[in-house]
Length: 200
Image 1 (tube, rainbow, N blue to C red):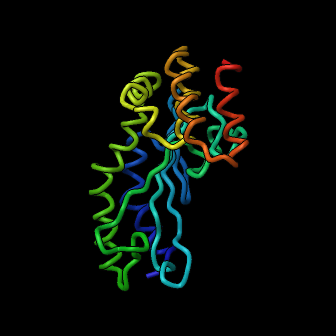
Image 2: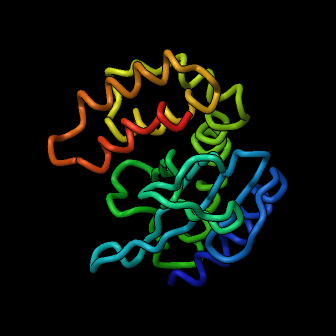
């Protein structure tokens, strides 16, 4: 099976489920926007000789007031999964090392798509539920996060959210943890962390 056939099956079986839950769009990327919360679902073709017969199902969540991953601003309706500060993937069954296989027959492709639809109700919905409503979901995320247990870039994103919520104490703890964990050469990241409370 090829990518176009597999994508048509996803459009027929999975996309109606997503659209019933508020996602909009066509092609390989669907978005759901609710206030500042932006959710992105994306089908990405796997590359490489061994990955060419498969795809990845990318999940992204973003807040409109945050710079996108890598810096800059993108209009909510144009945000791609790679722009989102919170990202994950819907993973295929164990043993599928290179994404969701298209299969060698229509039956295999249909079976894979049926499994994806069933997985949406678990890992897919769970990811978006964790980043579902602002400010509630993000207040909970901040409460559950140990500043010393996250990567420096994650600390930056969470510090910006805490500052936006007016929680300067939590923002400062995240900034301090991020600065302590940032690699010595990550000068841009350190500068961004130092600016969080200065611009709040």
